[in-house]
Length: 467
Image (cartoon, rainbow, N blue to C red; front, top):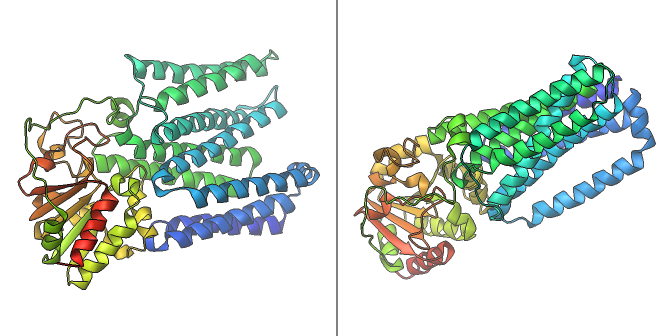
């Protein structure tokens, strides 16, 4: 490694670290993304043009193919990112993450084929770890993409957790047999293919039973898997910037997974085994069978908000589905012109991926200081005149605090029931992603404004202009 490459790798590593730091806050996230991208550019330039090792010769002989592949990938990625709708952003994240896992798995396959035969355990471990983790991340991410896009449902059968455990032990056993066969001069390819096959099956069954309510946790966990797999590639090539990037992604994904689990008051084991939130869940009445709801009209809601002192908007996935983020921002501006204080309550697992609501509202230029996290906004509900719930369901369900039989019992929620008036914008009384009824809808303080979220918000905007 020459001094120029070392300097470029240093710039790349610093770019990754600073990028991750800036991504920790909504108002600097875009800057962080650009800094991290610049760091990756430095890393790529360093490995393509300033590598004096044997790999550098291979790169130099194939520079045209490599640059062509980079150009094609850049164009495809740019077009996908430009055209993706906010409702499809979680699927795209899963898809891109899966590509990272596949890349790590392919690196391990190539390295094994290049060094097939006797090798030390220290060299074999990153190869087989990258292969297994990368394959699981790829197949799991593809299933997550299918589930989020509605193409794949939840599939469960008795004893599935034990089968997954058996597959995990089997893939580790195949990895050991592969190493033993290679170092004893025997044909090891059968065991190598067995590792790949078992890892694919494990990745499929790992994500298949997990319901939609838990998908933000799964996406975060699979993201950490991809980071660990990439770090294994850094070990293989003695590439410090690749190792640094993999470690950062792996550790950040792990921390985010822990944060998501904490927000749901569940352990990671419970998320992976409990399979809450499946599409086949039996709807629960939350202890209020035969309850009645109060339907309200846009005119009444507009008057209520116009003469309020404080309004809190609770965004959910329904807001993204309706593409209503721009209209809700328009409503916010109109209320503020009337002297009403407006804030947004952000639950950590609202939407289909971590930070989904933050990104959605940022797209419509909502001020970052108005996006308030759950632990900070909950004490404010008691002094709030009107709470406007737009497309959220499970994250405002009081059953999480009052019904021990509820599958979401114990999950921290937004305490909207403490406010003076609650207005819920919803298409119908259909249950949320967790598949259970919502006690909030039967609260005497709650009014239901039925219809498409965007249409309902536009009606409120129009009514505010005339009341």
